[in-house]
Length: 576
Image (cartoon, rainbow, N blue to C red; front, top):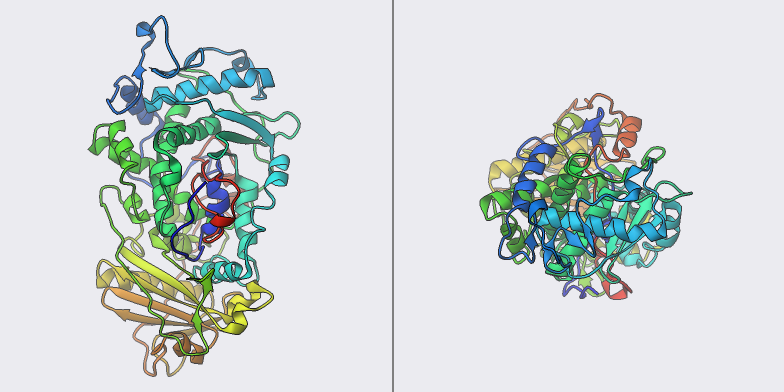
């Protein structure tokens, strides 16, 4: 079981990290029939195959076991000591299930498929499993039924915290409960998960009558089982959600790298089970939340490739588990070793307002570079204006582009939720988010980087109908809708502070000195960024992201249930 964090922080993405990131297999992007995402050092399937194939013939000293080639196999191999061999099955063995048109596997056929898949993961990752891994295949209907209560155990204070935090990122307006928005991603897009508490993998099948085992999803989840056995995934507990997602860049990047290499060998080096049923209908998810948690799967493989290239192959990746990345910036920009700046928000509110506390701890968190990119791209696939347009989000390759001028100068940030006693005690936390507020202090590598982010946020306000408030410097109001309220900017060199409150008077009550009298130093900008990738309207985007096999899957893994519900958990199922 995870230990309870020593401090409390706002969930921001924690409801999803609690649900989706504790599960796995959320599908990734597909544009115009091919995977879409960032350009750059991401290897193609063929190059991944070549790299991983070469790696499999070397046996780094830190990796248990010895790789055996076809012509150099021992007469008496063992599961514990022989890479590519598990419980009597080699990675390239043929099985009766290989000749079928679907991937439905009977109970007596499941173990051989799992053992062979374990051997294949060993072959690529050059590391042996220490223990067996149980696998179960369930239908999506059964999965939904069994997992429907994951969002139930959330206090009213936490719900208010979640709603305000997501609203700050313009992802969930106050007409929608944040738990509902995160559950939409969790319930409809998960393909499987690994539960370290039981050492079990559950694969979710789209075929309700004869559940099918997706071998690539199985391979990805087996990597997490291998990580847990060799590195103890329970030790990776981020102090903030940005750090949590950053650690996923290593953990999920490792698994996604292996999965891509696994897939590149299907039909070439070995036969793979192929499912006959694709996800039916459109995937109705909150895109901002989706983008915020997809980043480890988009950039993680490149991060792992960078480690392998800079160090000694898998040895360098293994060593990274002793020193994982601490910010999503470090994963977005491999080799940068970006350490987050220490940013704090002292309480400067008046007697009517206070920093919201949950379980006696201030509701605060770090959004991070990946979260900011998700904020600016949240509307890119919904046919609305977005700061980061779809043409900038999809640039070829696998995954999405998370390196943008608006955010790539990130150095640190902290967002703190504020509330009055009335808002904190409201019966409806979703509606009460409009009566709450926040202070979001961001730190940048340069004053120019701070201006870039400021301009992007001003553009975001403009998209939501904001107008300047006369007589108050750098203060803007959204009169109605799900993000109604008043927003104030304070730009001081490399620091940019954002304050939101229900009214102009409340701004200075939340943060003393906010919204001073005077002329604006910046103006709301105009933008016509409405272009979309060919084939991507809202329906096309939802359908495309539901295509399995052609694009990178979000094999989501680590996370926590809310920021303060860990002590209420009865299991530790936080790896996919």
